[in-house]
Length: 131
Image 1 (cartoon, helix red, strand yellow):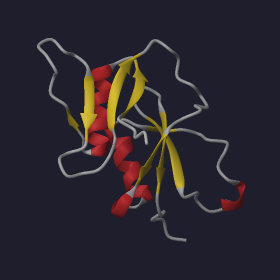
Image 2: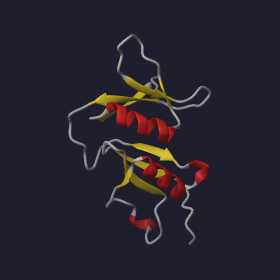
Image 3: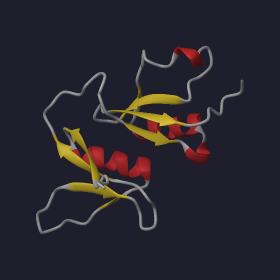
Image 4: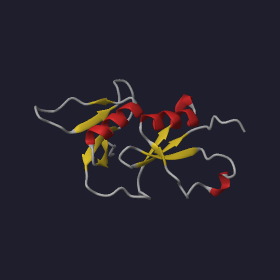
């Protein structure tokens, strides 16, 4: 059976993207494979499960409605607090017309953000706003 070895994100600034995702996920940059290796590959700290994330230099424009994206779990921090933390790291909120209608008028259980490179991702979790 195949497993996910890594997820590659198309970016225009590998260092900026690497800093954001390392801080967002608590990942560490894998040491260079050889002198002069500038490939940025982030991996979870020892003992933590998760797929590695590679920064793949790309000149392609960011897709407004990407066919694939990352979903991050907010965890114990709560959805709102985690979104605030990620925005503080450089993410931005994305106006997303596809929130499920059945969840209105309350807040959806996820928020769509874009990393500093414009790549969309979701943060899922329990909203910590008062009802």
